[in-house]
Image 1 (spheres, one colour):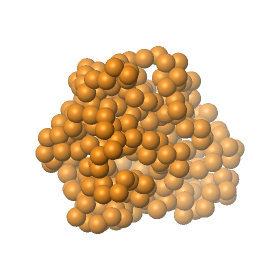
Image 2 (spheres, rainbow, N blue to C red):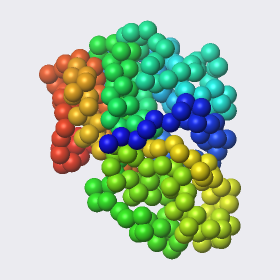
Image 3 (tube, rainbow, N blue to C red):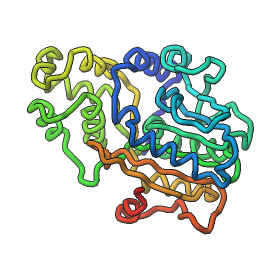
Length: 301
């Protein structure tokens, strides 16, 4: 069973609202230094790392714009909303394209590197994930690299009640961690995902007053107010496992081979792995096929 895809206007409104709260977001919803180090390492995984890359960022992630790109890199960003580009993108406006990830307005085999930080969560699983993989296959050259930081459920599923208990006891470090933990706890099936309005409703039912919750948690009210972007939102996030995403690569883009799966050591890092895949076969790389957790973990660098 799959959730219905929202009308485009409603999705655009969500991202415009998120853009207004962007400065309040932090790790792991935005990349940490460990994640940035992994992205830099991914650039060197190309078949010919000595060439100057043509790079594409899916979204307008500020930290990826400011990454230590090789000298001369041709950098583009692709985001679905003009509001996010205008409000968040720190680079030149000419570097940012407004368009859909699933139908990228770019020429075939025109990019050497594609990075996406958490964006797989934003497309319906599995249909949207398949289309995203097809788009990656379309724009990447043979020997090119894509690096996707995923948000995946923990190996031991939490209950929403346990997450909320930790929240009220002051045992969650930030709203960023709460959003991920509670969203993953509420998801019963990655094909359905979780509605952002449901996350808001659970938090509001447990703590009706944001001011009181700020006192309980020690979070600033400004930081906590970012959750209001979830109120009444029918937008859904989807949390497939890394194995499920890799299985779709193997099915729809078998030319991609898994180079590394990197899991950071920060809080909730288990749920934020980065998969780095190279297009075209390579005898020294691993096929992008479903693997058990122990095999995925063994590829951490």
